[in-house]
Length: 181
Length: 193
Image (cartoon, rainbow over all chains, first blue to last red):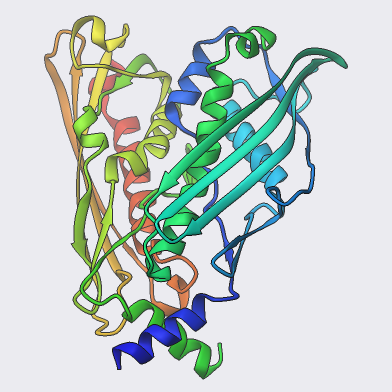
């Protein structure tokens, strides 16, 4: 009976389309922005360069992990907007903008080796003038046992933390905070 | 949902009987809104959650003899912060409850969270009922207690709702409790003196 249940469980998860958890801003990031001398900022164009490590449907043991915002570029846009909004620094019509190009975006739940990686090029502009243009990366690891019913949810839960880490790395860059002044 | 899919989903939820399943109790922060008529309290505040509580993992019952595990303080921190920004004009994070650790705050709010969960289902593990109680001890910068506010709220979710979100009852509970706490803070006369 247990074997049957396990089989059904595997069938349930295999080939399924799952949705990544919505992004939740991180208070440490928000306070960092709040205490900076950043002016009001909008979130500009977010794009994604397709590649083997940058897909809009991340494959996790045969299941597809999709963005709750349509694309992962839109996920990054939502993440930035949340952080800026909670810090009181977001204004949709501001002349200063942050744009990004997603270069890598992947989560893998190989047996015994769960990891995620994300890389994006961030550009800060003011009325079209580039004030900052750098690539930031982040990585994460998580428990990924043989049992997919444990490994797959772990991989799904790892995604928002991966994006939080990417933004933490961005906000830790003095050149970035300087470009927001 | 057809019968085979339903059976398969129940099997997926039942296969790890006896385990503790990780869930997140973070509410949707977009729903932590300030009532339009509410006037913010003009006082800088800080909240203090010790590092050991931020990392604390709590395990409570689910269905079918299983359990659920989560990090309540870490999970609700952002929504708690947003709720405080709805109530007070300036909010920061304190390193302690007195002196320089309070970062110039007039009040320091230290929340204690108590949770519980349950499910009558013998086959599926996600909780159908989840309760959250938050007791907030509010002190001034010298450490003198100003007031204590306790609120509790329950969240409920049935199988057809939580099949896409196993944390749903918990998230409904934490959303409701934070909105109750917001109302209580806005109504506390001690914080407007």
